[in-house]
Image 1: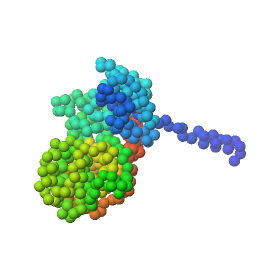
Image 2: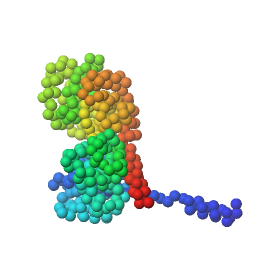
Image 3: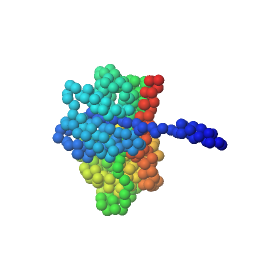
Image 4: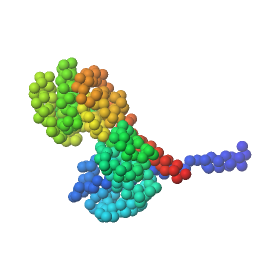
Length: 394
């Protein structure tokens, strides 16, 4: 090759070299105002999901700005994320938020909660070229007589994200989403919990049992603790070492639970009602447990299950859409039909004998539910919305 050919070859190579692609810039907005008097320094402790979701998205290389409605303006840079606490005047809030978004210049707007569809619609009228994705946070469809308005407001969304796509069915059956609106399956958040030394955790908490089974959730009808007790009572006939430990907050069924335990010799001395425990203590309890049990009839995500999987605890949970999504359709642990105590008993016996190791459960969490895994899912969702916008513009 002569010198002219060599120069031409190198020139072609340089011309074809890919140019750096700038990171997608996403603005996440939370229309729910901070409580009066709550300082920004405290919001990350009291509203951990504000930072958790933003940091999950940023973990994939996405640039993230967060807009939070507040009583006074402030700007905070935290872990590489730009948080803007915006105080908006009553009648001019839409214009002010549009101005802030104009300053930020995002590629995609990520709105928290389907309950703020009207606010997203109002912003879309100021910024018609900005793709909007709305993330579900245990939202419910509006009442029938209000649906024409909501159908129009949801029309501003290019995409909607649920923990499981099946959770969109109440909205899609009501015709609330436009045909072009994309639906994404992305867990609501992740967890910072980690597996720990089981012997140390048991010594610290006093949790014991073979298996030691942990419940974390309210004692209400939606969580169905009485059916869980029935299933534990049946399983105890074949698992004489089983011990059930219950951490709970609100407890409208506490009296019924106590009576159920007291009158059944299979449960007396086997069920430990811990009441409300600090969040950090929940992590230690999970590190001490062999199994995690839940009887929920519905969940938008299931934070307690997320935390159990993060700690490497094998789940025995109801077969609802959110739990199917988090467990990979039962690839770790077992799913059982809501309200079926006999099926729960079989699942407890089966998983106690054949439970995955903490390392296997944590590997599932890392691959599908970790901050990095959620970041990749969000990056893909944003890319699809931007591709849709480019195709429409073309």
